Structures are given as C-alpha cells and as structure tokens.
Image (cartoon, one colour):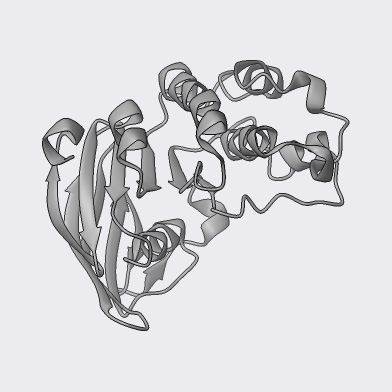
Length: 222
C-alpha cells in the first residue's frame, strides 16, 4: 500500500489534526490514547469529512486535493470501513447486511465473492439471523465481512476490538490475521491496545493530540 497524507489540517474541538506522512506497509497501526484524532483521520481518508487543507493519494489515485477542489465521493473510493459502532442495520438479516454495498467486480476477481468471504470469517451459519441476535464477536466478523464484500483496495478499522472483553478479543485476532493473509488488502488499523498492534501490524504510528510523534516497527515503538 502507498497512502500519502500531505498537508492535512483539520481543526477539532481541543486541537488541530495536522498530518504529513506516507504509509507503505500492509498493515499500519495508528496508535494512541482515545480522543487523539485517530478516528477523524480515518474519516478523512474515507471521504466522510472535509479538511481545511488535505492531499490524500492512494496508490496513483488522488482522492482529496483541497488545492484543486478534488473530492472523490466516499462510494467511489473503494475503501472498506469498519467504524467503532460497526454500523450494522438492526432491522436486516446478516445476509442482507452483507449484501448491502456488495461489489463482486471492480477487478477483484473471485477473491471477494460472497461464499469465499463468509467461509474465511466462518459466518455461514449466521446468514438468516438478525443482527440483534448476534454476540459481540459475531457482529465484529459480520461487519468485517461486509467491508470486504465491497471489494476494497484499503480497509479502515477503527478500534475493531475495543468493545470486546479479553476472551473475545483473543478469538477475533486470528480472524483479522486470516483476512490480512488471505485477501492481502492493506489495512489502516486504529487502536489504543499495544497487544493488537504487536499481533497484527507491520508498522505503528503514534498519534497524540492530532500529530504523529513517533513511527517504527511495533516492538520498537511499544
């Protein structure tokens, strides 16, 4: 993955998000305490927020360039996003949630077809159930599967395990590793848990009050 974030300036309530960096690893952690601007950064990459100033480029595709007025709509960015609240539709079945926004094409071949994704995440038996009847770990896997079924070229994961207890976290981490290895999709992984960074990520960038203050290999940083 090559993700360029240049001249990012986004005023927030208590500080200004200010980022100028480039990311090239398959799984990059944005690590730091809550309220430091990590989610706002993901929202900018996803196209859900507008910055005062920003240049965002994924591979050769410029997604945002405030200087020229370019702002690619979220639906055209081919970025899968799993937010903290998962954003699953409670009135729909698991299958209906998964098929929402499903894009089997986009040059992704058969890798992101429905059967393959649900098999990798082991959620075949959940298809006809309502989201409200799922456990926390099951909801996480369904949200991850839904993001994969959009045939993304980048996955944004915002504190994906924060709402789970330690036992459930230990069960979900192998699924995240499986997604990393099976699909090869680059990930931007937001967390404040050093164990998740060490288990999943190739590189870590430490963010405090809207700025990156350190970067390096997880074991060096943590």
